[in-house]
Length: 157
Length: 157
DNA sequence: TATTGTTATACTCTATAACTATA
DNA sequence: TATAGTTATAGAGTATAACAATA
Image 1 (tube, helix red, strand yellow):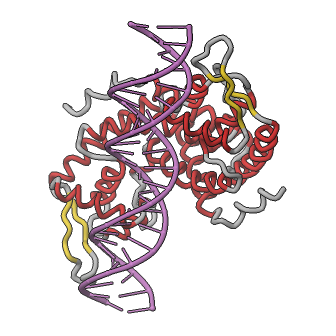
Image 2 (cartoon, helix red, strand yellow; image 1 turned 60 degrees about the vertical axis):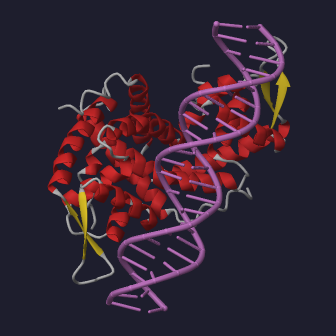
């Protein structure tokens, strides 16, 4: 029963899903110790690195739909990690700022994630990791450019 | 706003999630043209390659919980792609067999997925793909071995 | 007592449509 | 009219507990 999926393992999508499904629960477990989820951590990290951006920009950076950002920023704000302040230039928008508590937490969680990342990639060299990043970013870009265009012509063959 | 997530892109989990989130909708779109979802296709492929296995074994191969397999096999059976037959040896279990229609569909869909996989990995060489597979399988194995054990000691540092 | 398949259920993630207030 | 944020909602995907039939 070992390798009953050997044919599927030729496909990048299957490999991606297997690796992601195995790794994400570990990331979730780590983040939940700090009261965070994946997207709330990513949001905090981006806000710390680039204070003052607004929710729409944050959604674009993380490739998340805007409605889903609302609750995430709600949680970060209620946890005292981030502040919403009405933007002076555009009073529709909120400027997102990290609090000192938010900055401090981001440092600790980032360190923990880096350590966990080393365990997840144990057995891979520094070159392997650079190569892996390149491969994953190319796949992401290819997928983004694949807008409906060439999805369709295969069901008729 | 480009590369506002450059720090996050150092982390394998973030890269994995970005690539997977971008690629999976394309895979879903392709499969839905054939009336399949990701796990129902994977199940069909495994049943075609290894006829006679039961639902629990299928769940193990695909790393899916058994309750979720039930509905998937239901759908495959209702679509006339797979048959459940009571196993002679163990009358609790079902032996899963592909129908001729199921075998034929699997061939077509697999071909389409391979073509789509080539587009998703456009720009990567054959060596790149071998290397990528190795990296993803190592990450999956590392994650699987990371059972709660070393998740915990970081929140106290 | 343990296991196979099943039911019911619940939680997370993600996506869309429609609203409000500002521009 | 267009955009920022919001609300409500719905659909996948995934996970657990508990049950019936069989081992």
